[in-house]
Length: 430
Figure 1 (cartoon, rainbow, N blue to C red):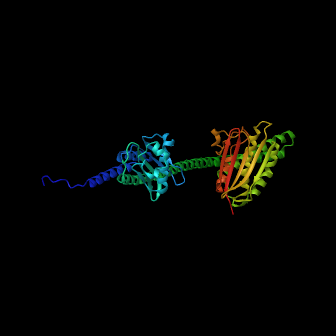
Figure 2: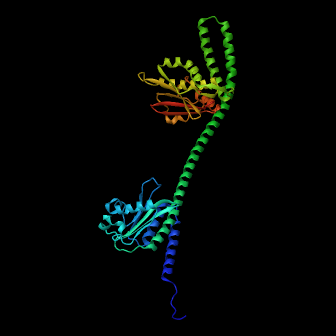
Figure 3: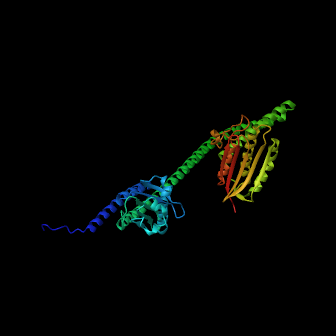
């Protein structure tokens, strides 16, 4: 009707305005999963919506952690520690402790702050401080003030900021959950990549060992027949020869033939390892029987052998084969220590430990160590750094195969100039 005035009540109009502001804040806060971006949006909303002169937000990770100054407007990070902000920090701690918002339209006239000298000293007037909480947990606190005017904030601004703080709490919780899941995902992916690389390396090593094993078997069988013929003929010739000088030459030939046959046997063991029925092997007995054979060779090279065993332990394996593994490693350690200067103290440490469900045998030496460039190749068949006639590079390859056969693990740690450590780990047999 003409001349009729609008029936919209000013309070209703104000409520609509606040609802629109709240919806806008909600959309902005849920538009990101980045905590710093959420805090920046929240701080802008505080300044724009309730018309604060300045403000800041403090957060903490959990109940026992300290409050951290995260973002602000019209306040720099250094100023927050000055005397001017002692009252502000005390209000933050009070709101965080009680979980109840604090509002004052004129701090100078408010009896709650009559003992706070900084209120009058810095002419603080309108103050609004609300908690950021979710499910009873205080995540942070929003602080806003106005030093120029009193009465800037009222219960409506308080209710509006509390609603925005609740929206912010949900957004921050989602962002933290997202960060946690992202870290778990990254950690899982990194672990998966490492496991994949290790598996690929093991598959490559296994396929290479299998291929060389087939080749070794063929070569061994081809060599074995002529070696048998040579040995048989040497034996026949020896019966017909009486000359002492020729007998010595036959001895040399016989020893050379025997050494060749020994190498052939190693090749056959490598390519077709005989399956010995596994048995319960006492590690102390294993070490004792092995050292009985090795002590002379070590003493001859002035090598000091140190033995440390924590407690009796048994593993599933074969005494002879496991002894062969330890012997091979000790021989390599002995040969490495030969390269050290005469005045260098030569030490081999043999240590037996129980780690969880594994029995670990560590054999360490203080020799020259293994260069990183060849460390990954030491378990390859026929790979050796020794001179011609000193080794054929099968000891560690056979050891690797024996250890794997009994569900064990073999690893090497070495630093040039600081020695080498071989670690053998086998499941404990109860």
